[in-house]
Length: 221
Length: 221
Image (cartoon, rainbow over all chains, first blue to last red; front, side, top):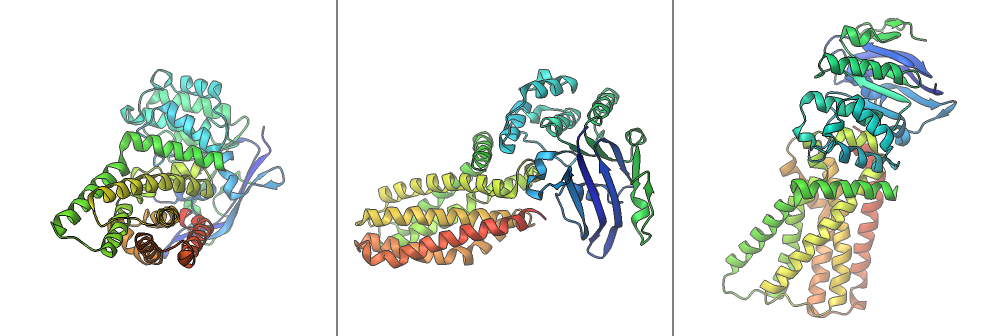
């Protein structure tokens, strides 16, 4: 179990004059799987991007901490794993080259044992030296999981994690997520009932469209 | 940070070798630009001052055709998010700057050699002054172009915006280096060109400092 925590305080996001969500508050600590649900266009991807520090909120703040020490935004990438349909890896490199370059750019040695374990778990070990452009969409999605997990992050953010995956791929992902959630915080943004069934608590974004401050909290805090 | 930036440079260099995003357009542009100048002057003998000016015109427009690729190619392939997830903004800027520096020096050495071979009037009398001008001029060109590339990467009409935005930012540098190149062709001494050289060095330092200070804001939405 990690001592990592992620806390959102009064998060609000507006695009132009359109309110995406208003006054979201939550705190996820130590470990477990937490969900973000909502219909298409409800702001799930926007919220996970704000949590990951990729975009900024219109108001409010997200705090990432290890123990009591706050993690600086420029260091956040080393604590974070992220999977989404709009994440793209380098097509001109093989899976192994991608993972080796990412480790080097992070400034950490490539954990070959862990990467080989993940490649095997996600059934890509035999294709690890093939260029990513030759992969199917499902294989690319599985490679994104390896990219997100290779550096053993304390926080794993998954946006529509099972898109493009077949039944076997989904089962693999669920098994690995359950194992990761024993030591890390996993946040899943999805509409899939089976994805959300893994979550111990959920944020329902439909209930953050107005000004009701305590709406939408199910099992949070 | 240096090692991480170097890792990003290695990734870009490897990617460039496989995709040839920038090199092909640069080589073609250099050949076309010099050929057009040669055809347009025909058998006429052009003045030294015009040769010196045209030298930097070719360099400016060649830079416009190739240096934007550092960020534009990431945006077009959708890998910007991936980079945000593995490195801090300063690492990304340093890595991209290193790549553009190497590219600018390679490109401009080729242009200088071709120019010397093809234009009789391009005779450098004070080589030391030309070498120092070339060094600091290229550094300024690379720093400014990298920052402008980051700004325009997220814009819609990148092709036209890049030279338009670059022109006012690069104009002071171009004016200075053209003047210094003419001095080196005239055989003006180093001491008599110290003021202009100091201005070029100041331009480089200011652009470098401003780029590192502003890159966070450009990079994160």
